[in-house]
Length: 466
Picture: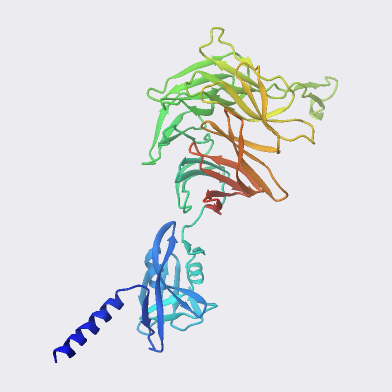
């Protein structure tokens, strides 16, 4: 008797031990055969989630209830065993063994029937997520409604960007999660300047159509007016300590000035009576500046002809942009012209210590290619750093320069340049439709491709806007 009792206890213990081990061998509702239930890893809106799965034939099915819980949908079961899932504006209905699901009253076919195992319903995850209005790829589920398009972007930190686009007569700026594309409206404006990010990444600044300056706290989304000065302010640039903003002042951008954020006071830094400055760059110390100067073309009209004929001659000789450097501490207090050649110059950057400028030089010759050029702040050393490929764009990130260049028949390339040594290395390739390279101070990379913003993640590109 004692032996039989011991054997019974041993068998019960073995059964309990087996039931605690995953994967689980569960009987189907019909009791026909055992099915192995696994705990599989999914990413749901970029967050890791464990979801039960089974393999039916050669097809992997996932738990309806687990996906529903993970995305925050609701589920209930009717008396006729119909499973009803509601998410946003979508209502899904499905039954065990069904080869279709009903989405908002319309039947949608499934390539593999619904399966019920151990009183849980399993379905092809791609079909289920798509029916709920989400997207699915390689065990990654996204239910975030992405922004429609993007025209400009800046990194806030490793996990967020500010994405801007036209909206009616104005512009909308959104905070966008770099992993999921989840977005939140930050500013809707008409006539406002582009948002510029503070050095600590905690706020942005802009000027409105009347010249007033505002900052927005990115954690609270609260806007604060910091200056009522009504002068035109172009190309706002933060000081490295975040206490003031430099800008080009006036309708002809003739003056370099700054506004103190504590009291809103505006002071002039350079007033040399030279009009049409552009692309203002400021050193970390806030005393050295680089900028373009554009000369206006010479326009002559025949005084003997009626002005309504609009018969004028335009001479653009000598109107190519030239780069100037200004040191506010210098004794002569005059800007120094660094370039005098006839090539176009774009994407001007100034090193943080103010020792040199870099830019892309583009000759008027149709056969020429864009070249990265660096010039010291005395204008004496002009060095092409990268002449291997046609350079489309230059972005500065700390002590590094990043280039978007031509690559092949269907791709562009992104290169990293050590600004001290000039050494270059290939970072990644991207579609030849890429129009803008976006790099953070920590070398996070994103690109605009055909109006969509894509973020580089583990060597591949992921769209976070439509």
